[in-house]
Length: 299
Length: 299
Image (cartoon, rainbow over all chains, first blue to last red; front, side):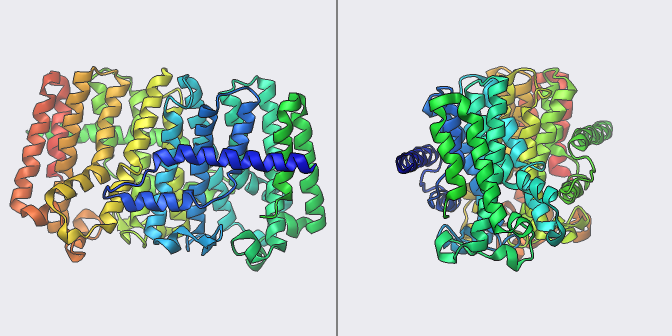
């Protein structure tokens, strides 16, 4: 489906631009004494990237006819969390990465202290954006977004997953443990991205369940694709160092299943996700294309 | 007033215990794979400390008869933010402190990566606690707390202040710049602590203004007292290294005004703060005692 793919990429680019428009207003260049912090936040936030989590939020919200000015704000919030997590994960004491999206990582371009603080401030910004009444006129819905994002990004979500990733004896992790690790580390935020659209759109319980199933499958498939990229990719293709997992003796989906089975499994999950949202009919075409895109991407 | 002082210290201890009770429920010891993260959060969170910000929240809420189970939750949230900021500020790349409250700092007791993540998770926990309906039955009020805490702790509040503190040419900072730096770095969270009580208690605009004035004066006085402690204190009295400001050539209230004027100014501000809340009558006695306590404390 070359047309669907082209249509998808156009939509991704357009949503990414719109999300950046929201973020731009929160991160104006200024002459305040704290301007270096804002510069650092901007450096990481406007470094490109496909904004796939925001895109999923907007697509999910579109199913229910949510006005774009609302879904884009929830989308901007999840991107703040994602961006802060990349900044902190890249720190020398964590994954120690020098490059990200083809540019020096924030602590390389600025310094480590600034990177810690920029991440901290981006986390706060996510909650500031969500709690503003522009996100949704109903306070209950905004609160639901805040509460679920705090949970998805905290100790029993993204940060908890990163902790397990850093401390686990990876070589001895089994399939179930790897799956839980990834569901926390990357899955929780992807799930939130889809569920935010459901919250904004007052989805029925059944619809919520469908979107959650979709997001879970896509999240897992996405991680398998990521492991495959790390396993196969060349450094210049993905804009960051690759092959690091193997270097560190980390068990991954690929090391446990082998690349062929991992690829087949990722595709099966994407198909399953696409099938789950089929009941939304034509409105779900882009979501379905996204599910496949997330496992076929080459960076 | 020895009786007032004893009464205050009893009240401080009692609120600290109650706040810890709230936090204890959110940080249970577990056998989950991410338990090391929870242990780290507990290590820093339950390391003692007077919990002065939470105390201020509870006292301010008491003015309006807010049920304790609500004010203690807002109090727990601000302590999460305060605690995360201490963990990140202590990191080698920031203030590089080895001791905090007489114990090794978190990155010394665990490691730097865990310290970064524990701080990140504590920030998320603050917003998770606030957004739960137990904090206040009315969604609008919970949202107000989330929105203002995100702002007070973010790029134009606490984190912004820390950035200025790290980057400014301190030797050349003038009084107005030091004041702004401190208002962001420590003042914003102290202001939030008082204003949270006002929000929970649906204070009138006038009452909010009174509490804001109170918190601004106390916040500034508190920082001056802190500078005096650093200037004069011995390392074993305050449980952390002292005299560091001078070692680093930092301009502080003390270096700009001299210790005598700084002490007089701190006391004058505390008097002014106590005077501001006098209109609440007997209900404000503990708040007034707290204002004086925060400038007279010896650690």
